[in-house]
Image 1 (tube, one colour):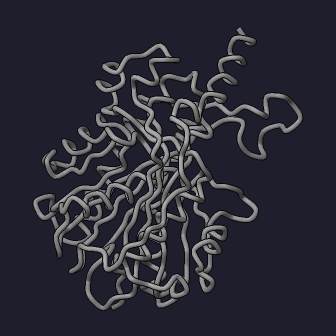
Image 2 (tube, one colour):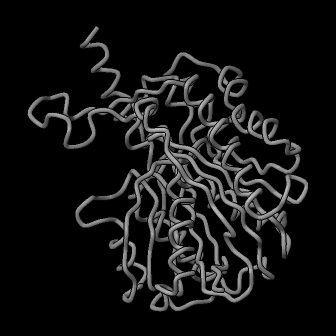
Length: 362
């Protein structure tokens, strides 16, 4: 039977840091208020295009696998904040990295985009349809942020991660996954005024906003992620004691704590970096996986449990058995273009636009 081993991994986080204290300069909040409710202390703000982050993360993952980009035969991009929708952003990335033999597909399932892509790519390799797949997850969520909305603006940041999966005869990689969607709660997370369902004929078209029902999201997220985790463990005849590390979607520290408690996983087995980056949506899991490897928290043969949820409300869980290699085979000097602004300077005009609109509407 064919399997899909993760052979390369990489991340790209923008250099500009937006701290809780920075938010206090234009928003009625405090570092203590944000940290106690979310666990987030800072987040990154992208100074270039989303595809720039995805390209760098992809090049680092491909280098780690020591592949020629032309060997990649499929690119799956999980994101809802793409550079463009025509052409699709996966094709922009394919061209930039030299993956001239790859099909290129965008996946929009919000925060679950990376795990959905890993699930799809793994199963395509298992069928023999593809051999070497690049799976990317990331967001440029700050581009769509209403910085007047304290309940939302403190949560999110920008980042991207990627992995390469390759055909293998060894029983490694994503052993099983469970994905789903609680569509009856689809509007609990919503970026409004974005899409063809909204009018293009009014000034309001220039502004997007958010609907974010925190209590409903918390309840559904913990329930669905826990159920997904239990399902994938059961499918493989394993229990939580067999799990070496949990790499969950980094949405909110309270959600992570509640998930660990509900599943019965010790907190020291849960990888957490939400304090550094906030919720980077589809970027959280691949960035966290890369950092777990960098910090030597993943060993050959380890069982890794992933869990995620996002707008839709999409959700999923996956169980990975890690292969024999935990170090990159190669490295690249690929990086983002230089950033000459602070995070506050990058978003300054956007803060003013939404503040002026709020004052006009008052």
